[in-house]
Each structure stands twice: as C-alpha cells, then as structure tokens.
Length: 380
Ligand SMILES: NC(=O)c1ccc[n+]([C@@H]2O[C@H](COP(=O)([O-])OP(=O)(O)OC[C@H]3O[C@@H](n4cnc5c(N)ncnc54)[C@H](OP(=O)(O)O)[C@@H]3O)[C@@H](O)[C@H]2O)c1
Image (cartoon, rainbow, N blue to C red; front, side, top):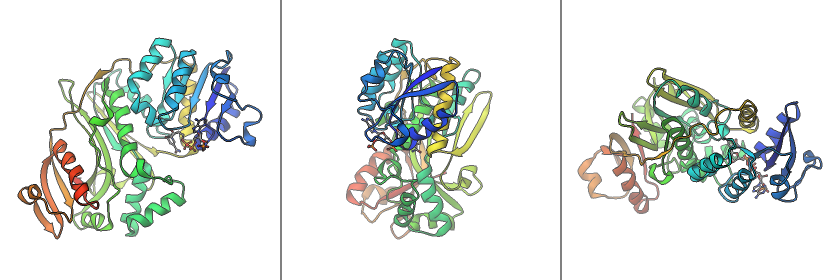
C-alpha cells in the first residue's frame, strides 16, 4: 500500500484526497496545510518533517503551488527518499534541472503529468511516443483560462474586462490572473513539454512570451472580418541538428478551418509531431479539481508500476534560436520609426508586417513602455 504525504489541501489537494479515499492501493496518511478543515480528519501534519521523517510515507504529493517553499519541500522529500508527484508547473519549469538531478541522485520518482494539460494524458504520451519516434514539434492551446476569454470575446462580442470578470466569477481565472493572461502559465507548460519531448533543458527566460492582457474586442473583430480566429498558442520546434529552432508563446490569428480555432471554452488542445507517429492531438479539460487530481493519481499508479525516474533522463542546455520570420498584426497608438518603415497601416493604428520572432518580442517590450495598450498577434 502506497502511503502518501499531501502538501496543500486546496482545489487539487482536496480532489486528490477524495479520489484516493475510494482506492485500496494507496492512502493519504498526513496532510500539510495552512488551513485545517474537517476533511483532513486528524491527518494534519504540524510541519514538513512530520511527513518527510515518517518512515511509512513513501510518496509526497505537492499541490501547494508557487516556487518557494515548494522547491525546498520537494527537495527535502526527495532527500528523505520519498517519490514526488506534483501538479506545480511553476516549480518544475523554474527548477527543472535541480529537480531531475535530485530525483536521480536519490533514486526516487518524480512525476508532474497534471502540471501540463490538467486531465490530458500528455507528458506520459510524449514519454511513450519518443520511444519510437523522434519528436520535433510540440505546441497548442495550453491554457484554458485564456482560451475561455478569447472564445467568449468572439462568440458574444464581449470586451476583455467583462469576460475576464466572468472567468474569475466561474473560478476559471484567479483573483490575480497575471500568470494566465501574461502567458507565463503557458510558457511553463511548453517548456516542460519541449524538455520532455526533445531531451533538453530550455531556460525559462529564453522563451519569448506575449500574452493577451491588452487584447480588445476590436482585435478579435479584425480577425473575424478577415476570416481568422484569435487564440493564444505556444509552440516549440527542434530542427534536424537537434537545435531548438523556435520556442515561443504569442497570440495568433488562425484560419477558421484550423482545428485549433475550433477549441471552445476552457478546453486545451495540445499536439506533438514525430518522425513516425505524425501529428497527434489531445483535447481535454486543461484544469479543474477532478480533471487535474485524476492525473496526479495516474502518476501515483505509474510509480506503483515503476516507470522511469522522470519522463526523460537526458537534458542538454539549449537556447531557442527564434530567428524565423512570421507575419504579424500590431495595434498601437504610439509612433515608432521602425514600425512606419517596416509595416503597412491596415486601419488607423493597426499595422501588418513581417518580422523575426526574436526581434519583434524584444521590440514589443519597448513598445509596451511607450503604449501600455500595445497588442500584437502573429498571422498564421
Ligand atoms: N486548479 C487547477 O485547475 C490546476 C490545474 C493544473 C495544475 N494546477 C496546479 O496545482 C497546484 C495547486 O493548485 P490549486 O488550484 O489546488 O491551488 P489552491 O487551491 O490555492 O491550493 C493550494 C493550497 O496549498 C496551500 N499552501 C500554500 N502554501 C503552503 C505551505 N507553505 N504549506 C502548506 N500549505 C500551503 C494553500 O493554502 P492557502 O490557501 O491558505 O494559501 C492552499 O490550500 C498549483 O501548482 C497549480 O498550478 C492547478
């Protein structure tokens, strides 16, 4: 019987505990939580050591979120030879190398399937596919909150602020929605996916990211009048030499026939492309208590059935090149010489231009200082 120490008893922690209560092969023995509630039924741990020093506990589930103290707690658990399952993409993306090295050094398992795609069996299928095919592209719609917002703006002709508030009321967006709307969440997910698929370790800051904080209904409507649908998309591509040709996150206007353009509400569509398997896409609920808890428990069962220490053991430090040209839509009220020289003005304050991904993301950072309402999206 697997004995588990649970760190965090919030949305996902409660979901994991409720699923495990119905199983006979595992048990949550102790729970570390800032707030004590009735469901914890006397299993409260006074501090971390009550879990990490308990010889009966073999596995720790971390669902507290954030980087600190989550990293220190996971580290301590692994050093005490506990397997770790986490749904926390922030800590895995920020401390990727350290976490895998700790798992290897201590001979314990580290799984984080729920960290990318909620309930979608995503990382585990990358793990399976790469045994046969060389995976050279991963990507998709990896954030349910932003997809919900863009979908509602499109279907209800609603303004960004109104839909964001609705997403918060429904529990899809957090009180501070920054990680979702600024693209940080999706950057972490594409990083973990690319590292797993390509056997690399990409530094988080090397993935250019532009979110949807400044998107307005007029941008979505511009797309509609041109037969295009706006989505926030991530992609990472490895070339034949094993270099990371590109890895970035940005809003993109997709042709209405593109399967990604049809993904509704808070759903995710993630895909990988490999040498023999071709493109495989997975659609599902990217978040939520039970969908996410489902994948945490899948990881626990995998540990019982002994898979590899982590999804991949190789990790070569690689920085994406991103020197590829794309077409872009830009909306700004700021005057800029480079923009006037490079772009053609579609309508007042709306421009189209061709630019390198790495260069336009750097330029966008400067433009946001000149014009806080600056928005851009690629045209695919
Ligand atoms: N929610 C989703 O749909 C979803 C989907 C995929 C992945 N995830 C990931 O799953 C993790 C948990 O998310 P969640 O939605 O369950 O968050 P949540 O509802 O905020 O739950 C986190 C819980 O951990 C507690 N906590 C925070 N710091 C702690 C500490 N130092 N010691 C003990 N307990 C601590 C929090 O207590 P307080 O509330 O008192 O701070 C809270 O009860 C995150 O990493 C998130 O990114 C969530």
